[in-house]
Length: 472
Ligand code: ADP
Ligand code: GLC
Image: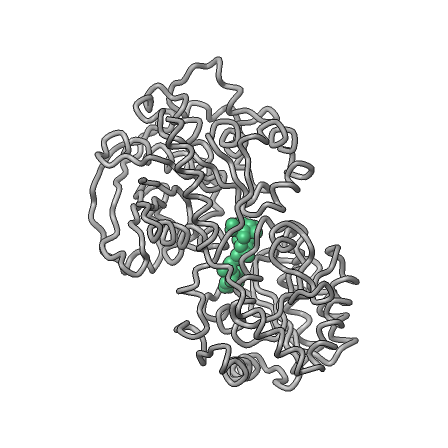
């Protein structure tokens, strides 16, 4: 079984958030199950890419309307550490950028990437049995494969679409319809949602299978999907929720090269203390007080706009530290930076993206805050568990599927709503738990034993692939 994952991110080559982690780990676990899972992503202009050796295996041209773009497909030379083969679509004029997203020509970047993949596959002798698309950036592939005359030869390849986040759908106007190769115009409705070309909606309509990254999020999408509720209800029969896993070989406190001191369940107290010590020195925090942390994109879905008030109120009422790592909404960033002046020695924030620092925080903070409004799965809480860091989560989507409250015999602290009050109450519960060090450490040991690796969910994907392969 040969599966080609198509994505804009893949850790460690390109990562903005959890999509990168998933595409950088699921294929590895699929390969361990005997599948041949490969990944194709853009050749982004990142430092990581520049350091790698590549070999060009294909050259071609994509046409976006009247404009032609030369492209090549490169294969990454050393992949032992990754555990899967990576193909890189190099379109110098559109994809050679230092950031993964955020450009005014993102539509052109996404469409050309998908067209280049198909041009290459037409002549590639090891065609995949399944094309697995991730998010709206590759959401047009199921339509193109099934409808475009040019790619008819690929039309019997089943397509799977994974929705990591239905908030982003990649809509663009019909003025750009000429970017797409010719198809039967009577089927134009397959592209449409709300009078736009909507790649996520097109993917949902045309993929053979659609899945979300947790069962809870699949259910929530029926009622709240940024306008796609009706479509998802209509396509319900081919939809399934498969919970994300994490890569236990990368996220392992015993071997993680990014943390200050490695540890196991038996050495967790001294190991975590060394990591906390480093954080408190680096960010001028008080090592004796419990440390509550947030790691993530500062966007509305993550409840990031609530963080300044949460931090202020929680610091006023509790003897704690708070550390925030992330970037996003500039207003939130400014408010979080301003708070530093008011809580010297107990509060800090690092605006930016820092993979190493995130690992140290998982290994050294005492509680992780996730006040998400929307959380299709969430990986942070699973990394937290693996490192013995107690998650405080809003009961939504994948957070609800993975975290059980201590009050219910579980191992985390949950709150119903993403409100300042409820998060502050949950922090107060954390303070009480931390004061009972014996119980707190028992919970830490309990969470480190939980297995959220891809072992279970990779098998579910494989079952879906095998089922679809029989339908061909
Ligand atoms: P999302 O994909 O919605 O951002 P996830 O919980 O699925 O959320 O995954 C987020 C991933 O990105 C995790 O690996 C987390 O550690 C990482 N991450 C988020 N923000 C930062 C940051 N500022 N610095 C380092 N890592 C970050
Ligand atoms: C998205 C979601 C996040 C999920 C990640 C990986 O970015 O916001 O909840 O964990 O994709 O699937």
